[in-house]
Length: 442
Image (cartoon, rainbow, N blue to C red; front, side, top):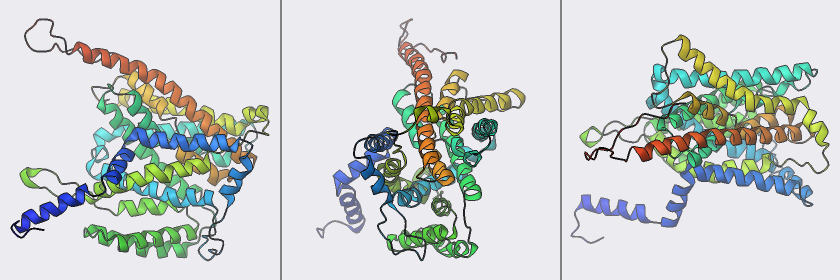
């Protein structure tokens, strides 16, 4: 560094070189942060799994998922196969990012204001309760053997839903995305609670109590803005291993660690809000989650083989019927109905930009329950076996149907908003000011 450059400028030059180093890696990370790319990679992982599982080499796919890379790790129950590592280990990264997003929403986002959060929060609850009731009703009518999978259709996949909305909704109101994001965040919080409470086998309290120590140390460091990777990463791994050893699903550790990260960072020059540590960590870890953790999980979770399956038995299985009906019908009616009732009988109101037709599309979109639904399906029925295969097929079919119906509705709404945007650029009276048109009615 030349001596004639003053110290403040030297620091600026160093930061500049730090920003411009490894431009390819930074470009790739920025690409992976976009919702469309994350959703596309998730879809690619699922498609590759489906094709491979139903190809002549399908046995190799099954053997790959059952391979145990560390067979000697039974002390902390770490002698897991690759498919379980993807569900328990990699998804912890995804849920860490979810935890950061949840914390930001509660502290500085829409969930901070109860009046603004009321509609999407109630919509999320309605969108989980009705699918569960539909699933339970279908399976009770068939004898009740599949009741332990009641929570499978309650989840909404944030990555997939936002990716579809980003692809087809260039002209849709921004408030619609905020509504879907808030709904999906609350949905994930409730799904995490369901996993921790209802899908924990062989609970051992001592390791869970032991996990509080690394989580507390992790929280102490991040609260003091200490981002030493050599300390935070081992603490996070220790917390994950202890939570996993306790019998609680290990992804809960990711959420708890995310909740410890501070959101607010004070004000900078001219009163501008500074990005908090939660936002910075989310920015850093989202490419890992969207570009690696979730697609790899989808690859191992979505590979249902139908080569020797009895399609008639699949289509008439109450587990399959319950999941598909719950995702396609239950999610839509639950979200739309609960939102309408709250707006009808209270002072809660939709965003001025959003019509009920827009909300219909988002309600259908919430029926994409891919990632968390597959995870709950594995916890309820296991990875192997007929029931596990039927759950995967049902989640894929229900999510795909919901995505196609939502695309049809939202594409039509997007075209209406695009027409309005074009008309707003027209100056009919030639006064130099574009004429203003109201939103398209639903």
